[in-house]
Length: 74
Image 1 (cartoon, helix red, strand yellow):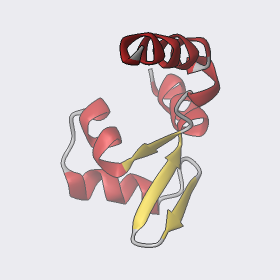
Image 2 (cartoon, helix red, strand yellow):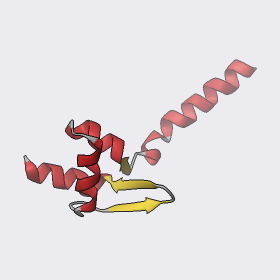
Image 3 (cartoon, helix red, strand yellow):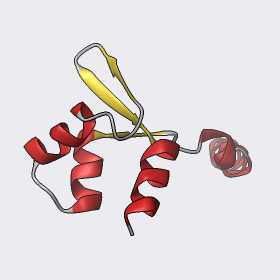
């Protein structure tokens, strides 16, 4: 019975996976994507090249605006 419930929950999660697509990046993630230093990543955010929001002590960068900015750089 327990295994059946786990399987049911896993199927439900798989079917809803598209609903939970990631919409933001962290500064660490853009640092990794661009292979740059953390201060350089923060400088890009401060320049306002893409949309970002501060939530508490964290910065979240709009995935859409960052991806559009990056595509324009290539």
